[in-house]
Image 1 (cartoon, rainbow, N blue to C red):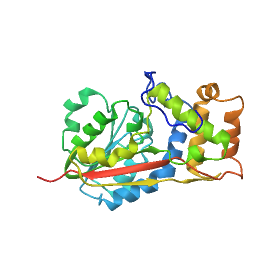
Image 2: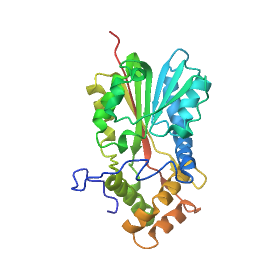
Image 3: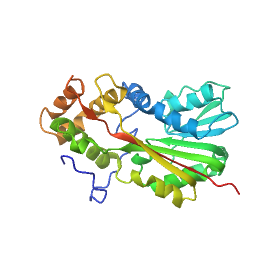
Image 4: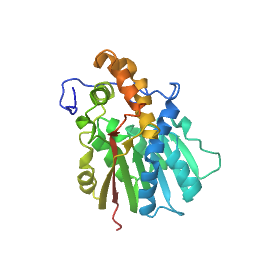
Length: 279
């Protein structure tokens, strides 16, 4: 397993789902774990959305809104006309009655969404989706659904995890724990990040234009939010990881994340964007 990518053709067929079989919102500290991930990458997401011109007059859909940091930023700081935060469990979003921000409890993969008038084709000037498609076994279908919601002239912006660095880390416990995590996620809930670098091609094939992409790889430091995110993720998965690792290996990896010797690059985030042509 050490440093090896997940094989998506492996015979095991995962039947679990994010939020139920792993990372339940009912788990103590889950909102804090999600917030650490948001703190690590919100600045990058905000900078990209700002560069695309998001502002007053826009109707926005935030899919997989998590704790609502991007949704609230759009509604309260950017001042767009409307933000719909869609999540299987939007309890952490913090929408206020009567404001620009509304929540919808829904699963992106639910076929019934095609009949919901709030999600009519071509309705949104911005569709934003971060750290969702990597957990879906039919990610191509979900990506096509997201693209269908984009209005002519509007933007689709999608982000997911990409791991370009940890297979080469000299820290054995850290490297093996990260590899075990990706394997457990794949086996339990179908997570797959092996395809995410194809985002630009996929968006172009869906008819979007002005396609672009970027990758951000933050450093791991003891006080960094991304470091706290990985520590929280591993603790949440402790039972499964300890089964996959040598005795004591997970604790050695967690100790490394808290050590002054910490000197690695985190798995990063790839963001891709494309525009629906007018006319």
